[in-house]
Length: 400
Image (cartoon, rainbow, N blue to C red; front, side):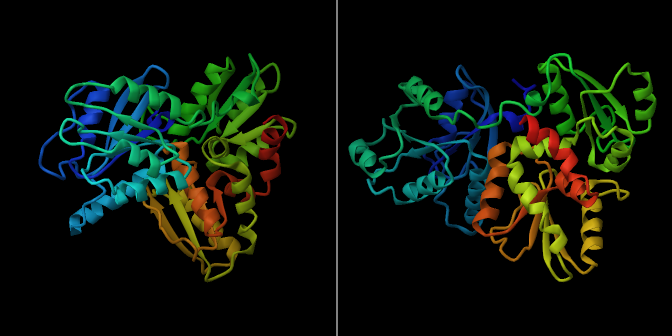
């Protein structure tokens, strides 16, 4: 279970008021009493990620969230953290445990989840403690299934597990990163920069995932740095069927690899896998119209610091300034940090999002579309800078 990248697992988030039984429910579903349970409201102060293995869905992530009803100064911050979980939620569970039949707050959250195309399952919990008018609740929330459970008595949890399997989105992620681009036995070269931007003995997440996908589709994968690439090509009996390279060494690899060999990048493949390639390509076309004074947002999934001018953030920043003639107002966000109001930006340039799940990246694309702000991807931007975007997209357009 732990060997599947967390970003490739379905994310199920449990929402509800403080002391509604969210943690108890997750403990019951996972079969592990790992989450602290207390009669004191507000025990869960930040989102907590747990592993959940289901028969139908396989390894998934289930997220315990703080209460949605905390209006204290500190509580409002916790509620905001819970709202951020919506951006990565593939399936939502809303717990209804209040004695009132109004459920105004729960209904507001369910409406927000469904507005984001997130399926929701309603759960009536703590049924041993008080009566809940299920018929009234079903009438108010016509579009979501309602399951009545008792964690104390361990009753009807099977019905909830069944509902999770039935209502979970069938395509919470694309089935393959590169499988549609290769045939059995194809030779694929993975060209890494000599200075690999990852800790010793490790590769960055996109390279790991693409290598595994190639092996799963029975392609022959060879890894090499750009320095050894010419020597490798002389040793091959023929040309590779596909070359995948890092954006940092794009120029050099493009000069070495013959024009008739399909060439693309790790970042572009991840852009197609995690997001929407057409949207990113359209966003890249805005780069040439940027001018001094325009605001640009660089957004990254990873939390790290630029070093030696080698990582994508620094290179994209410099190239955008160069093409605009300087004077761009460029802001950078990392991790879950992303502005609610992005309408002031002329362009957003996002990283490959390899540590995000697809829902998380698609929510940012949806927000950019709603506010009319073009968005592109680091890898696509690099190809655009160097005038070779048509080449790297050709293999995807022909065989996708």
